[in-house]
Picture 1 (tube, one colour):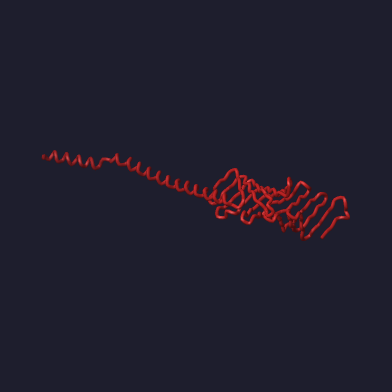
Picture 2: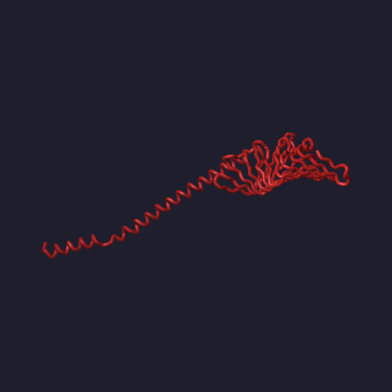
Length: 227
């Protein structure tokens, strides 16, 4: 081997060593991209699987409630289920049904018996073709206890002129008894009764007032009475 050939070989080796390895860079980038996509896929897969599990659990918790629950739509936010236009159907001690509907309902799966309701309407069957209607701005319904804590204005009335207005109340559906420790106003035909508290029993068809009770009968000034 001549000196010239030796020098030429050394230059070739140095040139190949210093040249950029263009083929390895795209491969590395492609590998990094695939790993990133795989990680994102795993994260989304876990999220979707968790959502499916929560929805299944939600439907199961709704299915086995001691009442008949129907609704138009259902959504999930963490452990809270949002129910659109829920309708709950239950039965009282005398076997008569009641229907509770609301604009929206929220149920926490950690407390499956509790429903937070807004714009509540209740129909309590009282006889053939007869019913007492109950309206409330909001309510917290306990399916296990079959009772509702009503708030934001409460009204219970029928088509015979009975109209009782309250700020808040507690409705025991099994016993068909509504109670309130806040001011109450009852209008019945030409009679108006105000009181500090009231208990209304649909089964016994009576209203018991307590505290400062004041009765006004229209058309008979001598009939006014304070207790």
